[in-house]
Image (cartoon, chains in turn cyan, blue):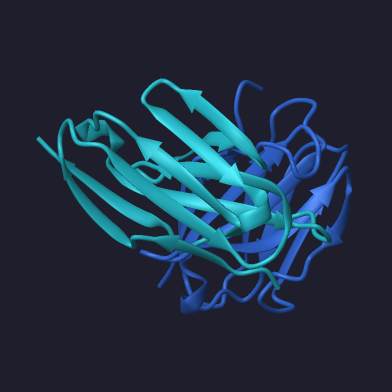
Length: 109
Length: 113
């Protein structure tokens, strides 16, 4: 099945810094989503982005489907950005999201 | 409802007992998904429903696990003869159509003692 790899696995930032999280996937996909899991375990859908670029406030995401990667940009990070960021994809045959192992982000004040 | 609702939020059960976990999706969402997350791990797919049918139940770990959905709405995940390795957070998500943006519930934390 399709493989999803995220990097880095862990990231520590000082408040106000910018960061880029990467998601590589092993096959063509027709659906890619980014999620944030906060320290209380709640999963929030950040972007549905099978291709192209989207922005939502300080967050933006770009997916280059032909090169099988997606990037999540966090600008001017805040302590509330802490948590785990997951990338998830659906392959062209399936109906379910396959999740990467996540990037654990810690933003220090 | 406004969001995906799961109950109970926490469940402690004795090894060997059966448990039922409930998911109430967003009204009108036809697709419903169950995932499991063990401590510090990623999300493991269990089963998904399109309407009341389950096109993919390949993630169910054993025949002790079953799920159903009725009326295209509420879903129940049942674990029979629970084992300690079943301890995890069970997450439910729904979407307006298959492969579209997921909305997750807050999960049920299951502890088998």
